[in-house]
Structures are given as structure tokens and as C-alpha cells.
Length: 423
Image (tube, rainbow, N blue to C red; front, side, top):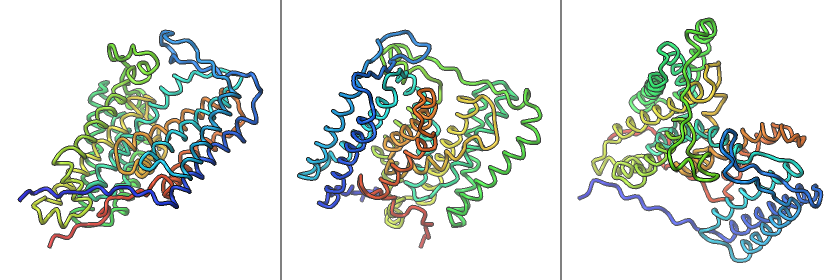
């Protein structure tokens, strides 16, 4: 008898009610593009998008987009798709069509904001990718834990501690590799505390994670005030990982400079995404880990060590969170400041839900949040008069839409957050 617990994926059923609601959302997107954007532009204006990131060779000419024609066309397209969705539905393609319309809405906003002006679109996308790194890695940390049945809201604390330790070790040794390894070790250490409290002693996992967040915030703030800010040269000047292009791939027009001309953290994100996706969904180890998160008693009956599996998952999650924290000091800012993670660990948890507990889905959510952050600066340059706070609200509104069930019910692993009692 096999020791694997076979998990059957439920086929998503598109009910008539959800079909109609989603169709109304499609129509609302089209109406919004028409009402807010298309009606407030000057006919004949063009939006000019640069397709070469700053510092790159001009491989492609600028892209001139006719503003009025584009916005009216996209509005009509969204309305047409909405009518089809209400009438007969796109069935399994519904979520993909909705994702496409969200992308078209964002593009419509950019076209409207850039009307009569120019924007380096390629540079904006490159910044978006960089901003998504800690969010995506933090989300993968949460996925590893929650797929095994352990809630980890301590991602914020692990990232913050990783950022500080990376700065301290990197500054003291002037070696960014040692700083990176130390950050991963710091994440592992905090994860081990969370694992012991949650798995062995069956402490409430929310409380355990909150304690770690408070500990990290207090300890990093204390050390920063007493030592790091006092001895800036010795303890707060770590070397940063340089950007380096990947031969051949970085020379691909448009996407090459964006995807393959970055630092080690972006490439690490690619690697972690691929490895975790394959490990979770295409290996026996991943099947066992998911079974522990769905039905630990059945997994235990089939010979799977529930406790060991959960320990491994939480420790791996802590290592990834530490890597995410190192990004701030070794890959982005080049120094440590108190509270520099600025709640991104909690945003990563939202990305877990948004991505339906899958690495690729969470990567998409990370890009959405990262785009909102990068767009804040771009809109200030374009001077469109929209407060940056409204732009930062957009990803959270999208998350609430997901939680409301418009794009399908987001269902956590059945045993998520439930301590296992071995009989």
C-alpha cells in the first residue's frame, strides 16, 4: 500500500450567480475606463511610452499610443466581454479573462495619465519587478508554512530581523555573501522558535507569530538606536549586490533588460518560484506536505510524519523570509533603518490569499503590489493630481474583490492553523 495521500483537486464550478456577478464586474471595468479616462482626454493626443530602461541601449523606438481611440476601444472591448460573460460565460477561462481586463484597466490608466506626455514604461516595469521581490519571497514563505498547516504571521518580523543581521554582518565583514547567509540564518532561527511554539507546545499560532513580530521590532529598534545609528561606517554601510546581465537573455528587446539585467535577489526570486512550484505540485515530498496541511490525521495514518513535515516547512519558510529581508539592505537601500520593511510582511500574507496559496499566483499578486509602489513615483512625475494614497489603495481593493469570491473562492488548506494531536 502506498504511503502517499492522494489529494483530488476539486473542479471549479461556475454558478449562474457568479457568472452574472463577474459579467457585471467586466461591464463596470469598461464603464470606468469610459467614464473616468476616455471622457477626460483631448482628441488627437498621444501617450509616449519609452521601451528602453534607463542606462540601456536604445533597442526599440518609443511607442506612440493614440489616447482617445485606445481608451474608447478598450472600454468597448470590456463591455463586449461583459455581455458575453453574462449571456453564456467563459467557464474555465473566466479568471484569465478577468486578469486580462485588470491588466487592460491598468494600461488604460497609464495611457490616460501619460496623455500628451511621455513615460518610460520599460523602466517602470523594471522598478515594479524589483519592488515585488520581498513581497513574492515573503508570500512564498507563507505558502510553505500554510501548505503544511502552520499559520505564519511572523513573516514581517523575520524579514526585519534578516534585514538588520544582513546589514550588521555585511558591514562588519564587507562581504555581501556573508551578510546574505546571516540573514537566512536569522530567518531560520526565528522560524525555529515559531515552529517549536506552534508544533511542539501547540501555542496559538497567531499569538506565536505576533510575539516574534514584537520581538523583532523591539530588538532591531534598540540595536539600531544604540549601535547601528551611532557607528554608521562600521555597522551601517554594507556592500550591495551589483546588477549583472545574463548573457544573451538580457539582449532580448524589451523584456531582456527588465527580466535579466538585475541583481542576485531578482534571480533568486525566479529560482525560488520554480523550485517551490515544482516541489509542491510535482513531487512526492510536496504531495505529502500538502496532505499534512489538508488532513494531517489521514496523512499520519498512511505513515507520514506530520510533525517533521511541519517543522521542515516552517524552517524553509523562515529561510525564504530571511532572504527577503536581506533584499532591503543588500539589494535595495544599502543601509538599515528601523521598521524599514514597512509592513511588507503583512502585505505578503495578502499576496498568499490573492494568489490562492500558489507560488505563481502570489508572484502575480506581488507584481500588482509592486506596481502600485512604483507607480506612486511615476505619477508624481506626470503630475496628474491623484494623491499617492489612492494608488496604494488599489491592490488592497483588488484583494477584497478576491476575498469576496468574484474570481472564485480562495480556500486555505483545511488544517491551516490547527495544531495536530497525535492519538
